[in-house]
Amino acid sequence: MAKPPALTPQADDFPRWYQDVLAKAELADNGPVRGTMVIRPYGYGLWERMVAEVDQRIKVAGAENAYFPLFIPESYLTLEAQHVEGFSPELAVVTHAGGKELDEPIVVRPTSETVIGEFMAKWVNSHRDLPLLLNQWANVVRWELRTRLFLRTSEFLWQEGHTAHATEADASAYALQILHDVYRDFMVDVLAMPVLIGRKTRQERFAGATNTLACEAMMGDGKALQMGTSHELGQNFAKVFDIAYQDADGTQQICWTTSWGVSTRMMGGLIMCHGDDQGLRVPPRLASVQAVVMVIRDDEGVVDAAGRITDELLAAGVRAKLDGRTDTSFGRRATAWEIKGIPVRIEVGPRDLANGEVTVVRRDTGEKAQCALAAVGATVTGLLDAIQAGLLAEATQRRDDRTADVATLDEAREAAQVGFARIPWAVLGEEGEAMLARDAITVRCLQRPDGSVPASEDEPDVVAVVARAY
Image 1 (cartoon, rainbow, N blue to C red):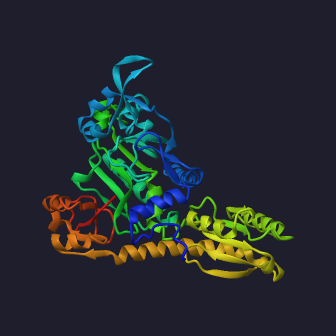
Image 2 (cartoon, helix red, strand yellow):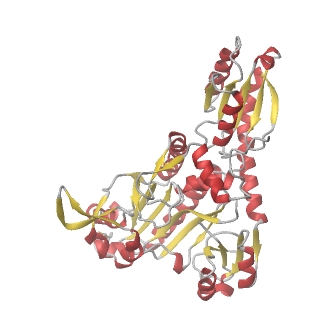
Image 3 (cartoon, helix red, strand yellow):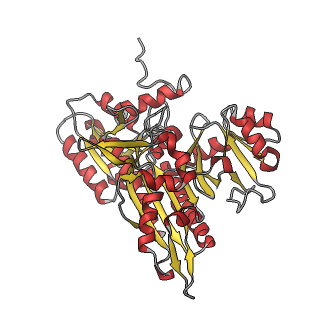
């Protein structure tokens, strides 16, 4: 009798496959409160790598990390009507604490424009204080009705950047810089995900924003996932919270602000973009473990040789791990590492060692090859580069193959059944956007024909990318 597959095949049931990967790759579990999640150590190790890479790029962009409270006075949110209207169905509100009813309800942080605006007003006085570039790594709470681990949970982890600028042009340029130099760079170069960047339509903008920019990726089933957003907030929040400065002439001016963020939703994107029927496939630049050295049998010299190989890889800068658990069958261990998506497996057994070699396995293609002991370091380093490039090329090819240029709404509907459709915004417009929305097809972003971000949706030749989305 054939052994049943470890995971539900993607073609049979993609959502079930996703749930199987979460469990069997030991990424996350459902928390005890509906919509919450427990991120397991292996999953959190991947998130830590994401945090490190994104944080480095944020700092290069000039922002500094700070921390703001989890609890926000309800009155702060009600000051900005459009903002609270956009978030009101998702707010978690504390009305009792310390055994008493509170004089004023407290909102559990859904995002921090309002509380950070309060302190920006305190810290900004002169044009010399600008730009003020802040970021925080935190959790937020949005009371979602339909939840799915990593993709949409009632509590999630993220970074949220908040900045104040002297001019609209400076704020606009910085929002675009974050989108391109921080988010897109990380997603393409580390996550190996060929994201599209563009403007959101008026309907899809962040509540209270004057412009929202986004990174959109295609998942393995052809649906879109919004991976990150960067918002121009105009002077909406600055006027409410009196974020103002004296210019060089001594005149009082209102600031222009931005906000931007990426979250643990990127973990869901990683799974659904690169995963296959054997489980995760983690891009080497992201992987918390890039290579696992596996002892096949605890024969004389095998464990010692595997330990030396691990040390050599670590010395060469490879994030390597030794698996010497010979009390568990080799097949079971190999399957577990495969499901976790470790980029390279090095199998060390007595027969290979007698020939002065080991077996090296690529997770992305499954290819196996013999490698001389003296060449393991160079071979693994080269494979990590090849796997990184291969995953990006594969995801790009899938996106391109499943993206259609269309001229009518009917053609857009048909194309969106399997992937993305690109339709002239002048043809679609807000009326067509509303019609597609009835079929759960949304405008993911607006782009120029060359894929760059338009300065306005009124630019000639703007293209709308439409798709079904998570």
